[in-house]
Image 1 (tube, rainbow, N blue to C red):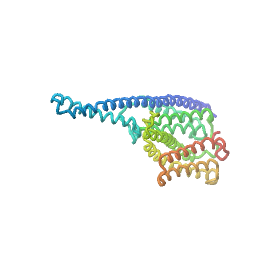
Image 2 (cartoon, rainbow, N blue to C red; image 1 turned 120 degrees about the vertical axis):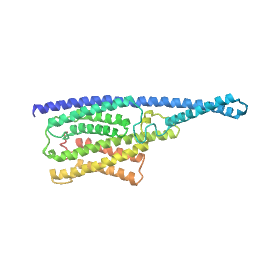
Image 3 (tube, one colour; image 1 turned 90 degrees about the vertical axis):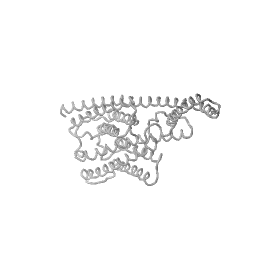
Image 4 (cartoon, rainbow, N blue to C red; image 1 turned 120 degrees about the horizontal axis):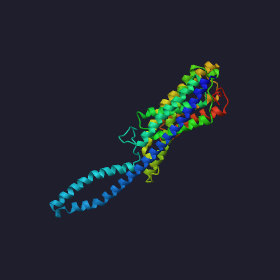
Length: 369
């Protein structure tokens, strides 16, 4: 190996470390945003409750004044009139605030559009995430330059590249949808992937085995990484959907809202609808992953399908997500059942890229372990 390759590999590891550190600070900022916003919303709830109590105390007095208006002089009537008119807007505002405070849908926009509010911690978190992605991209690029190929040849490279793509996709979606409530989960998962890559799957820069030296590596793995990144977003949304559903039922039953930070998360229905759309796109990508993998297998090993463990689990993932899309679209599997199917699908993805690669022998066992 040439010294320049080793140098690029060292730079790559340094960039990965810096990216993990930046993501960690961004993770803290996202968590701070959830905590701070939750505290602010609780203060709004308390204010709304106080205004409602004050109004309730004034209503009988206003009624009494109206009932005895025949005995009140014109000056007193003029005073009572403006007070009554001034209380009506206050009632509307407090009622709306109280509705939002106890509202099952929470304060987040169901369409996940950006509002006029300025949440400083969230903006700082997004800025740090953008910085982290830039550093992370430098790490992926230097790894590619050091190895002289695309950096997808082993588990270390797949995890580092997969984490990069997951966060990059999250930032791209942020341009059109306010998904900052997912920041803690997406960035946290990226940190876990980078740590796992460095601790458990680190592999020095090197050449690929002959079977991987093909342009199909770029096509097959790039689509798999992109689809996995989209599945990561839907996994986070499905998990939040389950929590939000439980919270909504608890509030509807008159229970206390113990998860104030979930007020920043859209309703369970909004999460489910967006998750379904993204899963549909990711499923198309995974279909191409399966197809191109079969074509590559035929060119590398002389057969399209050989019941290799990796091939089987790739097909299992396809079946699970196909069942999810079919059940939700035609069989009415909505709500928690749809969320659990989405989560099961993602757990299969994780199992395929970790347990299968590490503990099952097969034609894919050369993937850097």
